[in-house]
Image 1 (cartoon, helix red, strand yellow):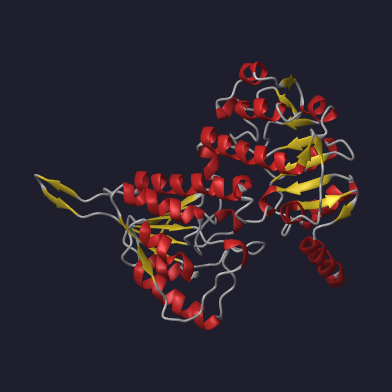
Image 2 (cartoon, one colour):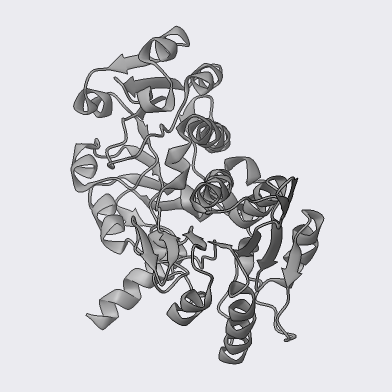
Length: 381
C-alpha cells in the first residue's frame, strides 16, 4: 500500500501529516510513502530527509495523488483536492463530517473511502491515535504563551526592590486536554489559576495541577460520552453564567476551550462580562473556529473590545509546526497500524474505532450518525 502526503493548502497552515521518522516505521509494516515536494518544509522536514528514510518525492499534487492508494492530510480537503483524488482511493484527514454534510456527499459521489480522524472514539485503546488530543495539547500551551506575551503585566509574583508584584490571575474555561495543558502552563509561569468545567469528574485533575476548581451550585453534571460535555439545562446555564461572571471580573486572562461535538461552541463569556473585566485583560478563545466561547470573538482576528484584547486564532497548532506535526504523524502511524494488515487496508466497520471514524465507503455513507443527519436534512428540504 502506498500513502500520499500532500502539502497543506490552507493559508497559514505549516504542519504536515507525516514526518520523516514515521516513514521508516511505516515501511517496516509494508506501507510505502510518497510526499509532495516541499510538503514538510514549514514543519522543518526537508525532502532530502524524507528520501533518506525511504519516501518518494513527487513534484506535483497531481502526480502524488495518481500513484496513491491512500491520501493522508490534516486540513479538510478543498473541492479541487477532492476532484484530484483517484476514484476509489482512501482519504484520511480532519473532516468534521457532522457539520460538513456537503463534503460527505461529494466524497461519497467520488467513491472515496473517507476516514475522519476527528471522529476517532476517545477511548483508552484509541488514545495513541487521538489527533484532537495531541493538537489540543499544542493549542493549550500556545494559548497561555500568547496571553502572557500580550498581557501588560507579569504572570508570576515577584519580590523586587521596587516592592512585591502580585501574580496574574488566569481563568480557564473547559478542562479538557487543551484546558488542562493551559492550566499546567499558566501554573509553571507562576499565575494563580482557576478553572471551570461542567463535568464534575475533572475537579480532581484540575486541583492536581495546582488550580482552583470553580464550582456551580448545582447537582447537575454535564459529562457526556467520550469525555466531552453535553448540553446543560437552562437552570444550570443561569447559575453557570453567574459563576463565570464573578470570576471573569477578577481575571487578568481568560483561556476559553469549551466545545460540543457537531455544535456551535457554547457562549460562556458574554459582552457584559467582557465589559466587567479590567482594562488590559486578555481573552484567548480556543473555540474560535466553532464561533467562539466569547460573544465578541472574531474568528481569525485579534481585536480589542472594551479595553480587553480578544484573540480569535483558529489554528494554534500550526504556530508550533514541528512538534504539532510530529504528534499528528505518530497518531497517524498508530491509526494505520490499526487499520491495515500485511500492508493493505482492512476495514472492519463492526470494530469500535474503525466504525467510529469511517464516514464513506464504496459510494455510500456508512457512519450511522452522519447518515442520520443527512436523512434529517433531506426531510427538511
